Image (tube, rainbow, N blue to C red; front, top):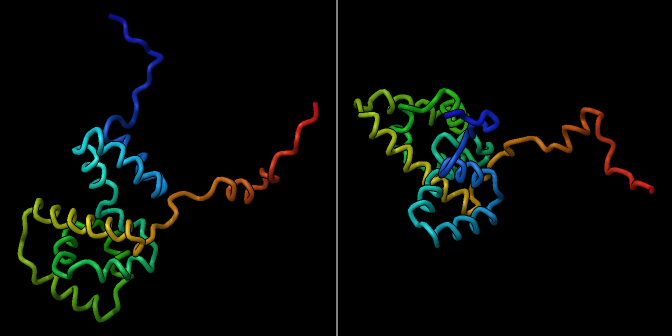
Length: 168
């Protein structure tokens, strides 16, 4: 059997593609899309909602929202989630803390007992849910993920504004 070489594999498919689209969509469209999916498949709608904002997306929050997020997250949960947090996430979170809180946090962190990885991941998922609700309610804001294409082109000197009308 000969394979068709013109077909290229996709990077995303199924639920991963749907979640990727949701994460890029504006809030109104996202809500309408999830509502439509919920009518057809409540399980897939719930999965998409859970993946919409995860613990690692703390990196997408602006500076003021990080400070707000630190007030929203229970201290005990933050300590546990810190165990598996990447250095980038730790850096963002520590920048949102006062020096005194950083010292108290470091002392409390060293006193934590060992935990199973799945327990830490469950706490991170719970924090992701808290922050997802904060984004939906408008208490937290996300930084722009990509620069505006028009701004990039204007800064490069290759964009002169709106195209002129063509004469026939």
